[in-house]
Image (cartoon, rainbow, N blue to C red; front, side, top):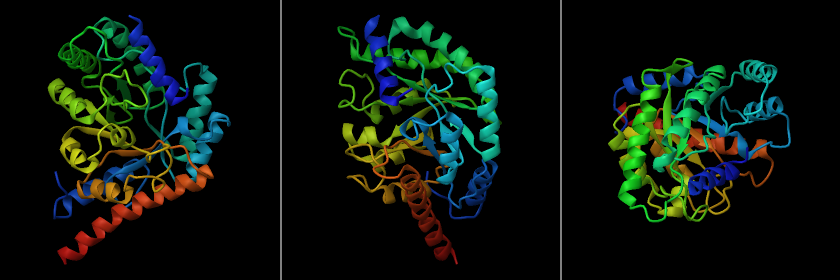
Amino acid sequence: MNRRTFVQTVAGTVVGTCSLGQGSGLLSEAWTLATNQGEATGVPFRLSVMLWTVFTDLPFEQRLEKVAQAGYKNVELVGEYDNWTEADFSRANAKRKELGINFDCTAGLKHGVSVPDHRQPLLDELRHALLIMEKIDCPNMILLSGNRILGLPRDVQHRCCVDTLKAAADLVHGKSINGQPVRLLLETIDPEENPQYFLTEIAEALEVVQETGHPQVRLLYDLYHEQIAAGNLIEKLQKSLPYLGLVHIADVPGRHEPGTGEINYQNIFRKLAELNYTGVAAMEFHPSGDPVMQLRAAHDMALRSGRAVLDTRAISAR
């Protein structure tokens, strides 16, 4: 499924009804986490590719091969498996294991958390999705807010987000997949992509996650969307850290690779390392050139920038 189509589908459905420690302990923990995920990179965070943006003309297994060729060990999905047979699941799992790739996150639920009448359909969707997530060893699910409802006060929809996320959290409470806790990740969408979307800025989405108050409900910080919606990316990245579950990477304008637009991604990757962010930073961009080369370049920029921070700290500690 195309990511933009996915967001528009959800929208249509809705309308229809700490800083890095000085000692070696934190660095060792981060290295261990990366190694356990099959990616010993020397930085605390892991890198992934949102698959809807690349290699869409190829069969699924070949798409994974291209991702691996670009140097990645993690892939994110948007319901590519919706019409798979058991044989399709078997082939996909065999290929990802052969390549050492993890499916770290998925998306595709068609109901938003901000619409009162859609709470039960969303929970039903999530129950079904959990069965698939277990089948492909994928521990994280992205949730969207859906659109604003004409005539419904904003504080009512805000409260609905919190209450629906609490109900969803009850479904995943204590569950783990592939050795990791199942987490629900709340995403914002900028108002240029969807002027009717409810949660367009990180500040309010962070409030929703904080008010939900469940460790398995986290924030997806999409830097592309936030730059268009409000900017001031790094300060909000710092504030979001305790609740941060995933970071999405693309430059503005055009949703192309880092370095093509106005976001200073070298500073973003440095800050992720400074903050000891141990989650995933996923590339969700349309490559402006050869996809493998552009994904590799983004991969190398992220690691080079993150390692520079750690190298500086190591020298200072001598």
